[in-house]
Each structure stands twice: as C-alpha cells, then as structure tokens.
Length: 320
Length: 271
Image (cartoon, rainbow over all chains, first blue to last red; front, top):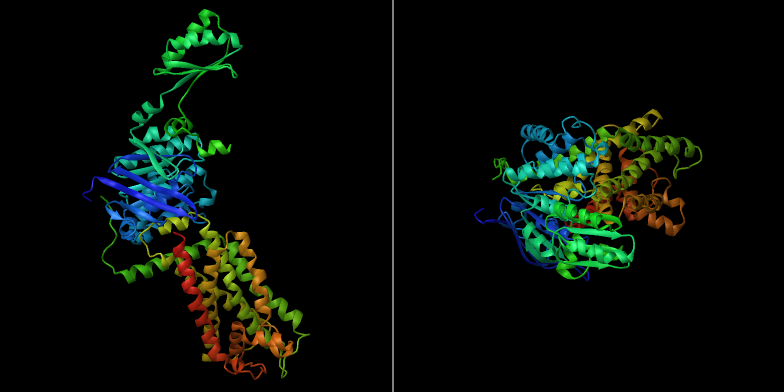
C-alpha cells in the first residue's frame, strides 16, 4: 500500500428509490489517523461506511480502501478491514470466546491460532471474566467491546466505527474511546462516524461533515470549531430591565457582539477562555447588582455546526 | 501492516468447505447453548407421531386395507421433513435481523458459506428428527422392511428436507421479521394436508385429489411407503405409478428453483 490515503471516495452516488443517500460524496482519509465523519441521522454516514466496507454496492463514483477498489476487489478489501456497526455485530447466542474463535476461524487463522487470538483479545478488551458467558447476558458496553475485538482479529489496516458509542453510558463510552486510541497506536487507520461533535473532537485529527449525502466541510477539529465559533456563555436574567446590564457585563469578555433574546430574558455571546470569562462575568454581575436567574457555559452542538455551515438545522431537530 | 496474514497454504475450495463447516459448527453450538430449542424441535415430531398415531389410528381407513399406522408413519416423516423449512426460515430471519450477518459479509470468507452452513446444520437436525421419530414409531409397533430399501427411504426423506432448506432460506430473507415467519406455518399447513400424507387422495373430492396427487410431498410419501414395504393401494395416475422417480425429481426441481433464489436474495442484501 504505497498510497498515503487509506480511504478514498470520489463522487460516490447511492440511491434508494427516489432518495439520494449519497450524492457525489468525497472523502480522503490519511493512513494512520482517526478521521471523523460527522453528521445528523439520515445524512448518509452509515451508507458511506457500508459502501466502503463492501456491504452495499455504490451506484456511481469510485472508492478504494487500503488501496483496493471496493467494487472490483471486495475480497482484498475485506481481508484488510474491520467493521463495528451501530448494533454490535456479534452472535448473541454464543459466548464471547466462541464468537471470537469462530470469527478467527472464518478469517482462516486455523483452530489453534484462532483460540490464541481470541484469548489475547479477550484479555485486551477486559472481557476475560465474561469470556465464557453468553453474549445475550452482556451489557451494552461489553457487547460493543466484544464487537471491537471481533473487528481487530486480523489487526486491520482500516477500521470502520459506525457510531461506536451511540446508546452507551458515559463510562462505557470512555472505554470505547480508550480502545480506539490503542488501536491507532498500533497503526490502524480509523474512520469514525458520529453524531457527537465532542466525540469527533476527542478522537479525530480530521473531521468531514456530511449533510444530505455530500461532504460539506473537511477540516481539523480546531479549524472546524474556529469556523463555527467556540464556547458560548449564557445568562438568563430575572426581568427585561436587566438585559442591558447583562449585555454590558458580557461584552467585556465576548468575542464579537453579545446577542439578546428578549422573550427568554437570555443574553449570550461567544467566548474564547471559557473559565476566565465565566469568572469575570459572574463578578461583574454581582458587583453591579444584576439579578440573574441562571448563568452557564455551553459547548457548540452538532446543531450549531450545521446552522453555521448549512444555514439549516439538522433533520432530527426539525422533526423534534 | 497486518500481523496475521490469511493462511495461503490452502486453495479456494478448501476454504469454502472450511467456512461451511465453521457455519455448521455455529449452528450446532447454538443448539448446545439453547437446549430448549432443540428439545422443542425434536419433541414436536415425537408428539405428532404419538398423537396422530393413537388418535387417528382407529378411525382412519386405508384403501386396499392395511394398518393405518403403516400408512401414517411415512406420512408423518414426510410432513416433518416438509415443515422443516419453517424452522429454517425462522432461524434465518432471526439471523438476518441481527448485525452478525453484516460481519460475516464484511469478512474475506466465502459468502455462500453462510447459506450453505444453514443447510448443513438443518440436514443434521433433519437426521436427528427422522431418527427419533422412527424410534417412536417403532415403539408403537411400526415395523418397516429393513436393509437397503430402508436406507433409500431415509435418503429420499432427507433429499426432500434438503430441497426445502433453500425455500426456507429464501423465505427467511424475504419476510421482514420473526413474527412474520410464524405466519409461514399457516401457509404450509394446507400444503401438507392436501397431499397423501394423512389421507389417500382417492378418498378426496376429485379436484382436490388431483391437486394432492401432484403435490411434491405426496410422491415422497408414496415412494417411502413402498420402500418401507407397506405400499398403500394408490391410484392409477402416472405420477402415483412413478412415485419413486418423482420423489427424486420433485426435490431436484425445488432445489433448482429455490437455491438460486436464496443465493440471489442473500447477495441482494448489499443492494
């Protein structure tokens, strides 16, 4: 694999009936990096991953993974990838160990090596104690870890993680993140889809934002945040007359003009140093005797990203 | 970059067989981990043999005389083999609604092994079903001819099961959820009743008898009755006269129809 790109998609099209799931989708992922694919539900993230993992055929365009064309050389691609989907793709009836040994044999390791590899991965993903219990008794986090372990049997060149932490509690989420970091240290390239800006920010060195089947931004996490603005400070006052005072207090730390929402008695502004800004504003408000209902900091959400990049809210937001 | 490379020392055919065997192993391990499901699958045929055997035996008559038990048992074997496709379909639909099929499809294994493995597992279970039913029948006084003709009958029954595995796989991939698979039983029941499984078609209304005679499973029923040494006086139609031939031909036709459909449907999962 001499290509410096582990994944390359050019103008990929996929239609389901009248709906265009992917509409000229482009993506390049550099080897040895974690690349985030960020977008709301229905943006085309899963379709993109399924096409790259050879599970779904593309209708137009071209895609290569680990140097092989996904349409013409699917077998070569499959020998070099791992996939962890939104739903743990493991056998519910078998035990964790039986799952990994079976997948190992199906990866043609042979019985002995499959057993060794299974034991190794169970240890690494902290599943040794649960190894001989049925997967149907596993917690969500354990399933996801087993699923990750199954994706790692061949130490893949490229690992696809399709919303690996959706539906997990914060502790399991951190465990999954930790596992992903370890994989990358070993040289695996990771394409991670997520709805959470925070997750992409923590793991990825580059983020592609996808909307309605097209890539609408491709940037580093910092670059992306710079484009959408950083954290915001928010103050809710007790009555309308207090709004100008709050505006004045916020203006001292804000980047650009503070905005006011009279109906909700809310004043908000973008800030750079979040903690210093909060301390400063709190002190000023107290000194001036402004009566405040609530004060806080808010990280930009996926919806902020979309509003800024596309001018429209995410589909899920509209539906809600 | 891979630290573990795919073993190169074997050819494609070897790995196809190995993949199939691994999928059969998976199927059998499922039964080992869920003994209740195999108990039900083997228990139902026993129960059927006992119920139909004792309830109907006194009341039913066989054209040309003879014991109804001798008429019924081969029919019961045929019905169990024929209904096997519902089990196949149910297992396939359970599997295909789970992510594990996606993992199989994203691996460098032979994708046909997923379908073939299901078939292999179900044939083994079919053997067990037949064996246990025959023992039950034997205990109730059924005495077939031994020897080669017995083995031939056993083979014809499995041949029918084999052919319908592919119908089961195809239907399992076609229906949307496990609940819908349960509905297959309702569709299959008339197919089993309008045949020579329980009643000689001669005793049915003419038009129904005609359908029953041409029902593929009737040929297997008539053929196995002959091979077990308890031929029932069957009608004079061509298809009944050539039951042995047709018991070989029908499943071949079914396989030719449903195997490509099943494989195509499985491949289309990626459309």
